[in-house]
Length: 527
Image (tube, rainbow, N blue to C red; front, side, top):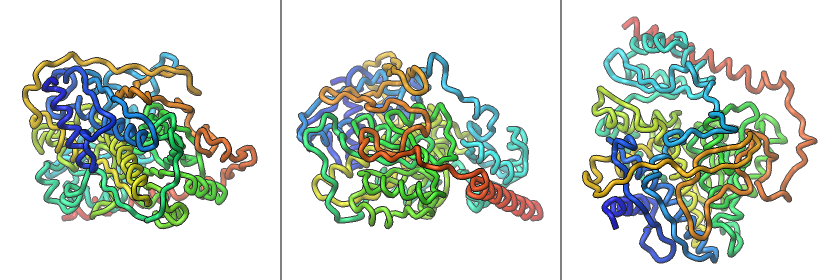
């Protein structure tokens, strides 16, 4: 065994231990091959991107193999090539995914000042503001009272003290994080709370027997039905990871919801995609039917966004006592900041990851790939779901899981710092691009990353779904045609109802955040 491989097994042991698992037990095994590339080749000067890309996906494959064994399958070997694993933090690191030979559009993000910028405040601190969707650009510029030009945003933010801006943004429900050092984060109430938790808290919520799954399936998660009410990356990619191992995954988008093509076409591989309008009683009832039939529920909207339509944990467990519910949030589902919104970037800023990558609190920098937490949280979320499935086989029950982007960032600092991994890892191999997955889809001919783990008995694949156009699937679990409904009889809402459902509430919210921003600006300028 080479030093690189020894280091990889150590990292795998540490991660599995956090989830109550051990890689050395009898049965299926992980095999790391080749060596970790040089730091410079994978932008791993601060964080070992090779291991961040390798270990969570390897852990998922290992637990999937153990589920396969529990259901009557044979043990298998899972091979992980360390030359390629750095590619899996962000799909654009090692290749450019394409459809019909064209890069996947990024046009909606061009000119958005809130995507890759770190802003300095009046008191010399730094904040990360997120507006990954256009509606948030509207809200932030209304709140700040400035134009969408980056120079205007910088000038306006420079007039705020950091604590005032952080508090005002929280009152307005806008995603912002003050850049913290690791020590500074631990001094906050929520920092201490989340740092004392496991990476993904797993709580047994009911004592019901689990839904029976068939013996001797062709794939580890065959027959497992996963319902994803998700957007962005961390939530959908958890569903994608489960689909890689045979789960039937249905992503539910809001009828008027938006997603970037470059996000959707990678994070939602293997998933059917439908749209439901929760303002319609008919669609709410359909979602309840899906919940009753599901093994797993994943959502990744801010706290309360879906529950306000009646889908609380209590209500869902009443409808389906053996459900595994996973709430993907920025700061988790418990603690002082459980209601605070945020994306990948807020997790990096709050946890101390950006200060670490930049060398100090005064010089924060993005981690490699920028969205290091998103795909990693997807792997962690899927891993926690599989751990809950294993527990169900033994003890039954319904479960509540709480993956978080900030918890992921903390785990990266805890387990994957380059400086705390052995400075000399022996022989090094040149970095390699990922293997390519190709196939025809409803969008055209797709070329993207092939999943990293190679499984000897149950090869990873996206079947029966590779990639479908956003929202194009009927609302039933793929592969279970017997549960389909006749969508030809479904009627849309009128334009007037759309204005009432979506348009007016958004305009009211826009006015609300503008008034909060103006009031704080006036109060602070008079001090």
